[in-house]
Image (cartoon, rainbow, N blue to C red; front, top):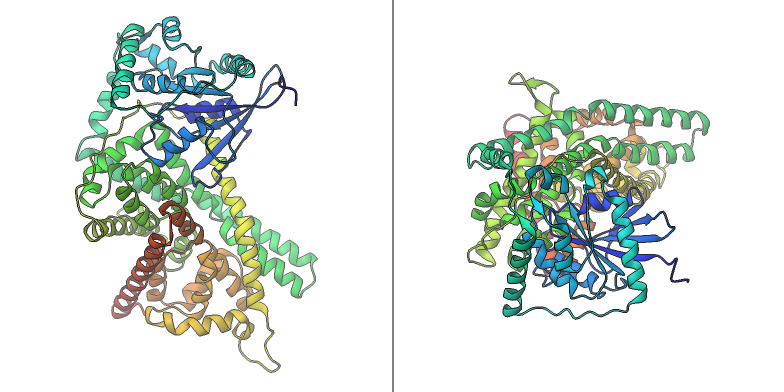
Length: 624
């Protein structure tokens, strides 16, 4: 391929909270894809830039790092990608270093290390508008001369400086075409670290003057949000609003999706003749997948809250607030962000533990991350709550169903803290390492960036519905339909199917906790993905009762299950490891079967015990 038009690789590197992701979105727009690095369970974001000159640039967004010395697994990925050591990842042609213009001190040491890699580099001074507003004076020409790299000022959230930055990258690519690799980087010793720190301080003193108008607004806001009592109350209030929103705001959209799926089922039923094919399409595919897709609005709302809080700069503050509580339970302060990520999905939550340096602290966080209520549990919780909890207002402002949902989330949080406390006392003793985290400046989230991140997460959910849920629903339909009942049979057809046989064979194991054989059927495919349990219940009851809408399914369950059974099912899903992909990631992150096996045993044990206690107590109180 002609060197002048080949696709060039650009590695995007920077400190955490430097606006790196916003800049990545501004550069690549919708031309990006999310995957994992080969052999490494760390999210890999790659995007494409097509410049005005016709050059195609492939931009790799690397995890945030403070140094190539790499003290955490996330930083190891960044180091290996920059040095061309990752399997299947060639050495980058250009390094694009992103710096927060309001906080250059830490990034200067990273830039000095990146210079030793020997690849052409461009420095993007991001959030430059905030630096100017604060009166921060940066001598750009001297800074560029001292570092030996071209500098472009940017405001990623408003796409300012993007064209100039692409031009600078193209010029660096041209330099890369003319020069070979000349990396002289090696992990520095103590003297090297001290020398780099001294050099960074000299550059800082020579090129950056203190702000004439310091950002007092951040200090005033922090005085409220970081108050040891008031700050925690604000955090709890935010979480409360988030869970209320998940239940209340999504209602109209969920009703619309459900109505659409109902119209689709009715349309198919009017076209396809009554029989096996109609049953497969309507009862198996539309009923099964539709009963999961209807919860997409709730999942999007949950992700929207998490993304907005992170972009605003509140996540680091929340971690700071929770440090004392989490430290008392044996968790590192940095564990808060992986655990909060686990509310969306335990898989990125487990992977996010790579920001924790100490292996013991990281393992403790991994072991409790699946206890946080992930978005895949929302369909199960919503269905059972709708079936057994009245939709009414209490205390004059709170939705009762939302309160129950909040209680389920709280149960997950409390159990995670309790389990981490036990793990630290049984497997290893000793104090948790002190928590140090740089608090980023507050900034308004960029609407386009938030929308793009939401779309990426929604697309992942939809792909999951297509690749995992759809085939499983076909399997559940087959097991629920065949073999046909014998001639003269009087019971429902499903009683004589393979699913009925499996469910009744396993029913004695679950009878002490109030589960019937239909619930057992739902648990088995639910091991692949938690939300499949709802689709499986929809398929099972659709086959038996010719009903498929989620609202009708909730009514069916409330008629056929006791309140004690419904509550026991909720208790099961608070604790049970009903997600095979999460277990696979835990195995890879911990380096073997030991910790994954221990997780399976303790979580199933907790699930059975909790369901048993809840069922027996509910029966004793008249809910049986």
